[in-house]
Amino acid sequence: MSSVKKYCIGCGVLLQDENMTMEGYTTSIENDICSRCFRMKNYGEYQIVTKSNEDYIDILKSVNKTNDLVLYIVDLLNLERDLKYIRNYINNKVILVLSKRDVLPKSVKDDKLMDYFKKMDLDYQDMIVVSPNKNYNIDALLLMIKKYKTSRNVYVVGHTNVGKSTLINKLMKNYSDNECELTISPLPSTTLNKISIKLSDDLILIDTPGLIDRGNIVNYVDPLLLKKINPKKEIKPKTYQIKKGQCLIIGGLIRVDYKEGGKNSFTVFMSNDLKVQRFNMTRQQALKDLFPNELNVLYHEDIVINGLGFIKVVEKADVIVYADKNVEIYTRRSLI
Ligand SMILES: Nc1nc2c(ncn2[C@@H]2O[C@H](COP(=O)(O)OP(=O)(O)O)[C@@H](O)[C@H]2O)c(=O)[nH]1
Ligand SMILES: [Mg+2]
Image (cartoon, rainbow, N blue to C red; front, side, top):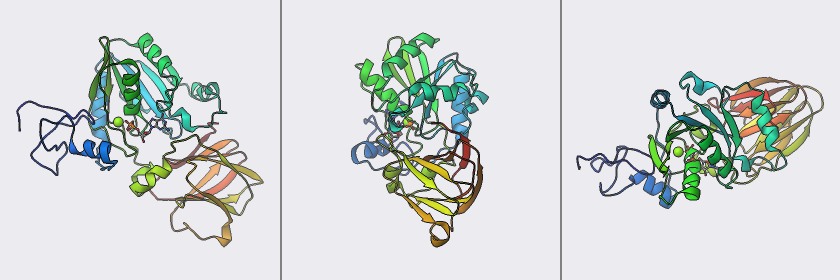
């Protein structure tokens, strides 16, 4: 192995050509990318790597030592429960970037989405709704970055899978002649290290791996199902007028029993590829072996199923959501 340290341009890992079973392996140190990224990019063969959140928190702490601007990316369909969490580690100026806008229905206005976050009393400089996939508002984001940046460096942080690398690739494609080929995948922990990418003489974007959400269903389903779960297109919400004693089964993964409450309406905001079926609770026993989460849903709340999306419930309801025991399920004020 050569003594010069070289890092993978796809995921940021230190390249090595000695141990095939170790991170960063490449057939020849002359290559720019590791074998894992090569396989993901060329064959769509995804390999899971488990990273600890301690490593990521160390990255956040190193960001805190700088005075640099931070883009905090969140996925509108899979918002984290605590949007203030990163403030435990960084005091930098932060722009909240509400991403993957394309998966939410077009009929929902950006202003309405932004109002939701404004009511949260978040201590961030500004916020913007974007969709890197649809190239939506990327120019406005660049203007915002220029407005708030404090140095050449801009860090891109957030949970894994929210689309950090996709956003950087899009910014580079739009505004730079430099090649940028960050590896993107529907799996957590695709990006393994900090990666600096020069957009222009006065702007360097720094991609980071992201915080892993242990409660996200993507950690517990067959990788082949990921394509079904991650919506590529605008979600067509499915509304069910539902009565006490009925249940919904979603994608063969989740069961929602409506235990107590009046006439109600449940609207499922999840990938169109997930089939939703309504049954009579007592006549359908499927998925009852999963972990039962008992929830008291209040007026105009969402039931969030981390990694899948959410169900908007109009009236008060007592429900039991059956899911893998590791999947985080909770209620929140309705997003839409
Ligand atoms: N629908 C949609 N999917 C996106 C968008 N941006 C990223 N994704 C998808 O989200 C997944 C994770 O993206 P990636 O950039 O690897 O996330 P990272 O872990 O935050 O870097 C991939 O399957 C992307 O194709 C977007 O704007 N719209
Ligand atoms: Mg990434």
